[in-house]
Amino acid sequence: QVQVVESGGGVVQTGGSLRLSCVMSGVEFSEYSMAWYRRAPGKSRELVARINKLGYKYYPKSMADHFTISRDSTKNTMFLQMDRLNSEDTGVYYCMTERASDQRQYWGQGTQVTVSS
Image (cartoon, rainbow, N blue to C red; front, side, top):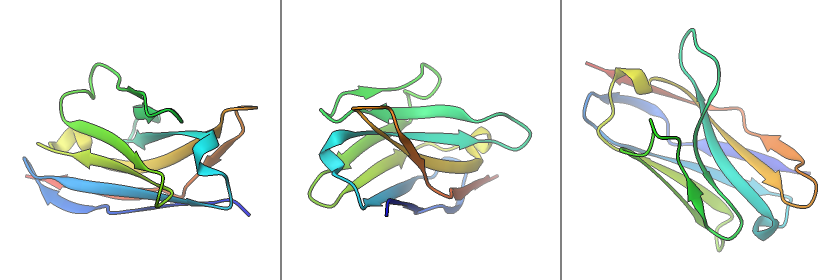
């Protein structure tokens, strides 16, 4: 059974930092690309960052300046380091993993990030 579990969300002040984690189980971690998405209040879900099974990273232009994605294959875990947070970063952050062979996706339940002024 595949499980994708996010953690690390919380309340942080403007300008602060958080580190999100996403742990996968039940799959061969090395065969999956992974990504972080977020859904801000009243907005549609958007891509924050993506990392493929070889470690190549992609950030949408609007996200590149204060998000850093990484993965640790020894722990079957992906991370999102978030720095210099502002109110626009408030939302639910979701972990998504995709099997390279057939693009089968698995999603976590999300973790809430709230940036307060």
